[in-house]
Amino acid sequence: MADRPESIIYRTTIHWAALFGPAMLLIIGGISVRTRLVPALVMIVLSVIWGIFSIRNLRLSEFVLMETKLIVRIGFPFKRFYEIPYTTLAGADFFKPALGVILGFGKVMILRKDNKTIVFRLVAKPEDLVEKLKKEIILAHEAIRPESPSSPG
Image 1 (spheres, rainbow, N blue to C red):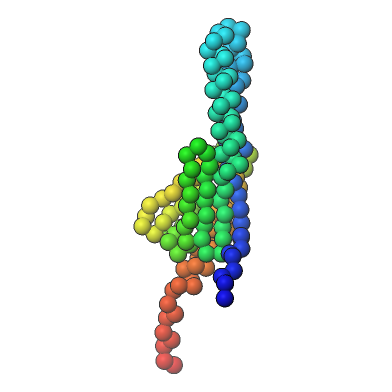
Image 2 (image 1 turned 90 degrees about the horizontal axis):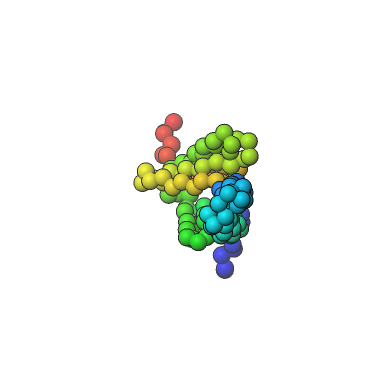
């Protein structure tokens, strides 16, 4: 009998706020064109390249909660891939800066049982991801916990 594929419980990605850096550099470069042409053009070219990398990162990055594990793909140009069973996790938390509260992004911290923390920044809807991840961690730990012997009565 073939194993059935795991279903997806929740999926999110990197927030579009990752484009703020390239956008600000493009604006500064555009404003500077009249006064300093060469440095302004360098800034504009760098902002376009940075923007292309950021857009590619947005499209290739995802956080997926499956039935038994968390899968994280962080995108471009330096790819990182995590496939973490819930049984190896101790917990999760998030932090939203002031702008993140307004726009809906934040930092997610995932604590492993070996007390190492994995941090992901600019996650879209971090509170939803952490809430659902905590539920899955609790369910996974309850499933492997040995049943306590019942006391004779």
